[in-house]
Length: 245
Image (cartoon, rainbow, N blue to C red; front, side, top):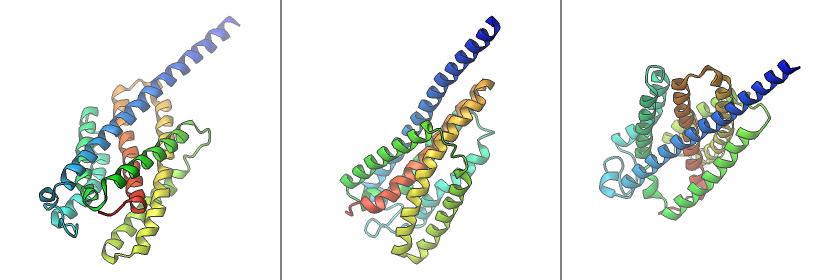
């Protein structure tokens, strides 16, 4: 009986340790993500509010991208693939530095936002996105429902969105853009909850290994996923809430 009590106590202590570690891990994820968002919006504001700098990437009047503008638009997508392939070879600090560079490049691609929309509508959309993101992430963290099955469906949806968006660059159809915005908002809302639960599950599965390097990299890669969800939700909401300059 005493042995049983000892095992039970040890199990309780271990569970408590995992809970504390999980909270610290998720705080690191949200901290890195928030720093990345700050870098993105500072770069976007600095370029988008300066016609001379914006003119390097887009026509300041029509906001149509030039060659450098197209490069800036597609560079973040290329960097995502690079990060996925190189993360195993990088140190945890290297992965985090790469993420911040990626965040700055994303700011270049979003600079037009500060020229196309009013500052008030951007701030309002950011606030709504933050509230929605926080609620979805909290639900993903606390729900007892297993939503791991959402993953493949949502990733297929993202691929479809990318294809539709690229096609609509040439078609310029408002109807397609409207549909992409609605569907995209739903997909990245789902990904926010899914990614949060996935991060929690992965931490619990690996916590007993004590691999600090892996946990550090995992925190940054988790921040990347949530950051991408936030940015996309912001862009899709801006299509409905943004006030034109």
